Image (cartoon, rainbow, N blue to C red):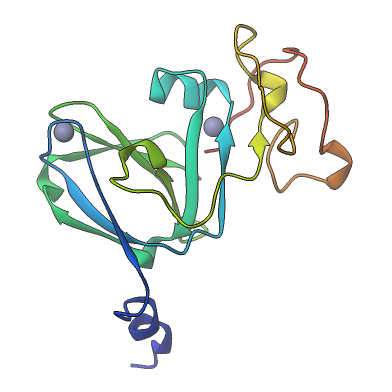
Length: 166
Ligand SMILES: [Zn+2]
Ligand SMILES: [Zn+2]
């Protein structure tokens, strides 16, 4: 009792976005209520996504529901802070759970439609792929978006290595 927030989170007034993996085994719904939306350029997101960066939306785990195929989702505990979820059939990257914060970083490429909030930053650009050029004017963070402000808006220069977040 006392979980006053739950009913609000799942209010029919809160728009729900649907998404699914490549093979369709996994379907989910997520509230159109991302706290932050951005592109993570860390080396681990590159591996997990197989691409230059990962488009992620941060949302409370309570606002994400698997509608179908829970049994097809496999989890890889990357660290104490991050558990990656993916479809065991087609391999689609679905999300990164942040258990210590109760957050989930949804891989936006699996959405069926656009979230209301557009991407508004690049994170971990200090370890971005040297072959990738960032061609927009969004703020860039050398490491985490929540790192000190002094690190914000560095020019991407391809230096550095390591770095992982989403
Ligand atoms: Zn799948
Ligand atoms: Zn990352």
